[in-house]
Length: 200
Image (cartoon, rainbow, N blue to C red):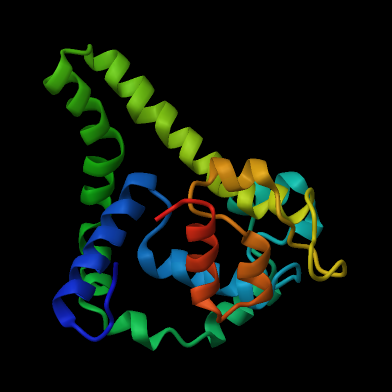
């Protein structure tokens, strides 16, 4: 739990988030937060980094393979993320991102099963290392693609985001995605929905 009134818990929470992001090897904190914010602010427009209206492949992984839309690039330049540039964890992220990513993503998941229960390094590399990494990436990308195309829209039938139980299950913790876009600044909504699902 992150408490914003206290410096030490916030710092610990920031370090935990940085390490978790490193395990996924999904950009650095600044880029990930910037793209995530743009996605929520400009959902399903040309300024959305992974615009679902451009098709399943583009919104799933294609957006990483092509040059971004000029509207997206323009909005990135105008976006103010000054709170991130003053954060201590954020500032150290650029310096240690590659080292932390190599340690957290392939190295630690490979060495833990080898050291603690005698698994071979090859199995450790491919199952908890690479297979886990591919599964986590695809679970994340499902939120960008499937959760915008298939599922129900309980409150507003005119917007693209949808509730999809498969996506909610595979992207553990990304429950009630529809509400996170519909109620952009209602952070408490996600917490109450998670409690209702038995996730604490």
